[in-house]
Image 1 (cartoon, rainbow, N blue to C red):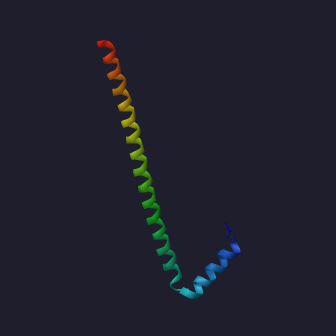
Image 2: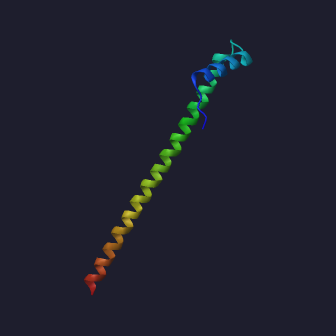
Image 3: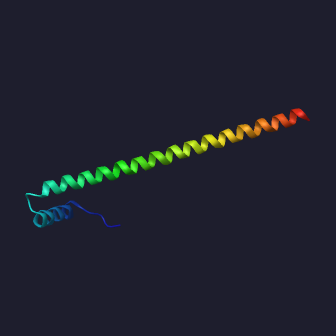
Length: 79
C-alpha cells in the first residue's frame, strides 16, 4: 500500500487551494471535518450495537447452559 508523505500532502493541499480558492478552502476543510465526524459517530454507533448484541448472545448462551444443567440435575434426581 502506498504511503503518503508530507510532500505529497503539501502538493494535494496546494492543488486544493488553487481549485477551490483560498477564500472557500477553510469552509471546505470544515465541511470535510464534519463529514468525517459524522462517519466516526456512525461507525462507533454500529460498533456499540454489535458489542451489545454480542453481549446479549453470550448471556443467552450462559442462561441456556444453566437451564440445561438444571434440567439434567432434575432428571438425575428423579431417577
